[in-house]
Image (cartoon, each protein chain N blue to C red):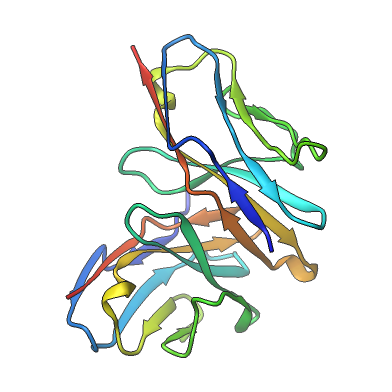
Length: 110
Length: 112
């Protein structure tokens, strides 16, 4: 069964550094999403992407965040200048009719 | 603003006992409601959604618009049901795009 994959599984970075989280959605899916979950808190929607552009974004998704689908298969989330509070689990998801989640990338900002 | 409340952080039952995981929502329009499950060391996955009206792994959930609730129920819990359960609400938009709001989750532990 096809799955959403995410790399890396864990990333540790210094505050102020740029990070890129990568996702490979399921191939025939049309909608792509990023969520985050800060430890002990709820899953929060960040952004949705459809037809090569952002379709929805939350208040969390500020100018420090960007998404890209550079080559038709990867779907990336970039955080330009990481802050301590960006430490979280980041989930990618893709959807055709049903949404499927990736395993997540645990980001730790020191 | 849409909001999802799962009042129980932890629910602990014995195998064979009935289970009800509570979910209440706040939304002015006509929402779509979902239950997601995350088993230990596995990814988040959709369990069921109200529009399907289906039973998955013995779980059912009925949308009660009067009480603004979407409680998840199973008559006889199994040990393998132990997991984190998240209720989510989404505003349905044209084009299939949506912004889901998740509850904080309820950890279900089923003891042998």
